[in-house]
Image 1: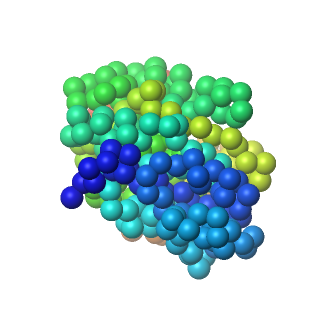
Image 2: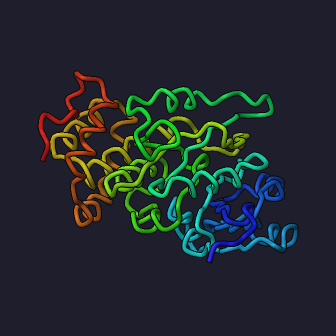
Length: 294
């Protein structure tokens, strides 16, 4: 049964690894129930959270599961909606209650992408403008522009839709884990919408990985997501892009290879409707755009 307090109808799931100071500092900003899933930190994060925030549920994983840690947290949540936060991000006061109201008013809404304010200066994340200008428009049943992508720390999900779509998987992991989930939600008929008045704050940690490492991970994730859900011509396009992508592309390709068998076992193509929506998001000259429905 849904909790009567609107601020307690959304659980915040925080996945973390080795960012004890940021995690402890920001946990008190979250409204409603909080689940912290620790990806085998070695810096005392678990003990610090339990000491400073005894009301927070903490799950200590034996190994680093990447984005799958969020799925672990969603399974433990007992609220109809779940917001994701990183250890260096939090949701603005009242944002979660507003999100619950938007979900209640739009029963086919599976995911809300909120706007993101970056750093102490509260700079609008450049992604905000991209999402607001989505070429998919605002279809019936959407409270804002329709999407086929989102950023994890700026997303709130309908728990039942998230779990039915498989959550974040162990093939793609992190970064770039959002694309496959977005495709599966959309393909199942759920709406994904940008709702800018629901805002998250992100103060990027100085302990973040290098840009080169992130770019390598994104190459790997795009290729694996294509294998999981897209036509073979798209897989070939991503493979060729990786081969032509210099050291970053080659490293991404090598990182993907051990996970290809698992991707093939879980492969099933999204529908022609989803491919058509993807085509709207691509440049008309992009070779990944479908020529016809499958």
